[in-house]
Image 1 (cartoon, rainbow, N blue to C red):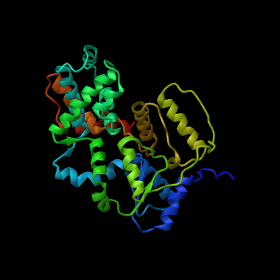
Image 2 (image 1 turned 180 degrees about the vertical axis):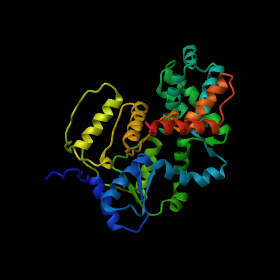
Image 3 (image 1 turned 120 degrees about the vertical axis):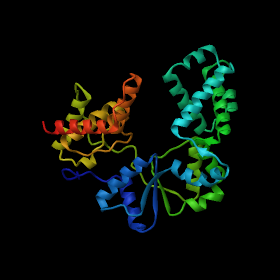
Image 4 (image 1 turned 90 degrees about the vertical axis):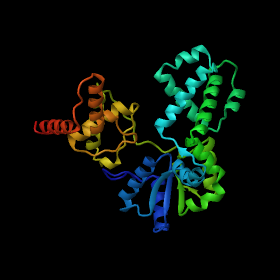
Length: 335
């Protein structure tokens, strides 16, 4: 039987969340998903069906690992580096490897590219999270290959981490695994429910296995052979036009906005267009990865001040920027 107009059938995952809520209404329940936003969206769907999510908390493997590793890291006087600091250390590792002639000339020339440095950052962090050591990478790669040269950067990066008393997410997982037996009893209270879509490898995979062995349970999920409602394709001139057509179809089908998710191939482009459209028609929306900083008030202020400094002009004061932005909003809303 099809659902009434404007309603969506509950998935097995939502049904399992409802069952947990009824069976353990007053116990602490932590939903472990790929990230916190994933869990919050599921709990929001649960609340729309049951009226609330009392006792639930959305979390992730990284957060739980951070709780378990907190005391050991503090005792060792090791801090978890911010995204900015980790990026700086990886960039510095590349520079050191170039200075020591540990990489080829072609590899060194690529280091001038911002895009290459971003790719190198991603590679180094993925290797770390995967539990791959520089020695293991050397053994698995051919001499002179780009991957072999990444091993040199990885080695320098690990040395810098140690020298700065800093660690990254991989270090957090490794510390949590090493101290699991001593610290988990203080951090894993309540019921731990693992999202069915959560599949990890490397250090996170090993940590997930320890969590499940300690009593965490996997929630029931929908099988892969669930029939899709429909597949409908259309063409639009711009991302804005495309999103307006999506909105039109949502309204035509009588759907609630809370039941709609939009997946895009370009987070920034579609995120900005969606933000503008939501403001125009007064519809609220949340975004998994946010929108570019330049679209926010703080980003706009920072851009103006930076432009003023770069052009050797006297920067506009924050008060003037605030008055100008408010005037622009008032002028736009009065049209």
